[in-house]
Amino acid sequence: MKTEIFAVSNQKGGVGKTTTTVNLATALSTLNKKILIIDLDPQGNATVSFGQKRVMGKLSSYGVITGQGQAQEAIVATMVPNLYLLPASQELLGVDLELAGVQNPQFYLKKSLEQLIDFDYIFIDCPPAVGMLTLNALVAATQVIIPIQCEYLALEGVADLMKTINRIKQNFNPQLNIQGVVLTMYDARFNLAKSIQNDVRSFFGDLVFKTIIPRNVRIPEAPSHGKPVMLYDFKSIGAQSYIHLAAELLQRQQGENHG
View 1: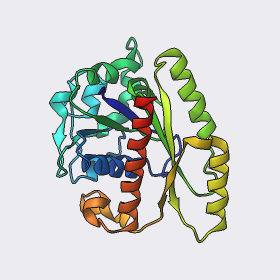
View 2 (view 1 turned 90 degrees about the vertical axis):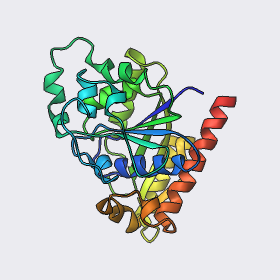
View 3 (view 1 turned 60 degrees about the horizontal axis):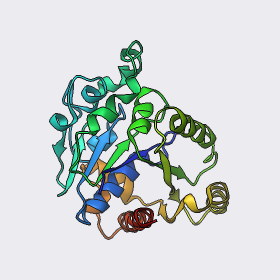
């Protein structure tokens, strides 16, 4: 099986990109899959979610994306068996400027990941802005997962993201597809959340995962303890929903591989 590379992306901030990356990857690793998370966000929230420190220089995603280091040199193990991390660096903030004069800088990450053949899945946690970091992620990826929070203006910016994905597909990466849309921060007590769910499902159709990630205090609490929610509180509704999402993702993958 070839390595499937998921870019977890949305141009809007605070929609659950990092939470989805960390917890979906953790859930899949418990199903005997070898997983790598690449933290491409200068804030380094995915790195911190595993109790790791952001690093400097070539031993980080910054080093890989600027061509200073190789991905396999920078990968670290997490406390989760089968789950590895390519940590972020604050230096990622300067990537757009640093790569401005470089030829074909959008392929740096893709080239580095071609050497990593022993992972089943790679998840790339993208920053909110569509700059050189997100461009590298989408050029390297085979699939995009789009988290959308069930709040007002949820679909704002999604049309722009779709245009970006289509442009990258046409110009750089014809293999790129949308794997699915994940509804996050869902609160069933509010009619607004229900109407947003209906809007998203009518816009994306079958691309929307059936599993919905609810608002659950355990999910935002977990990173402050340096753990994915599954390790922090396995029985919580938040942890269980990501386990269901992982199962649904595997089902989709198997359907595509047999299709």
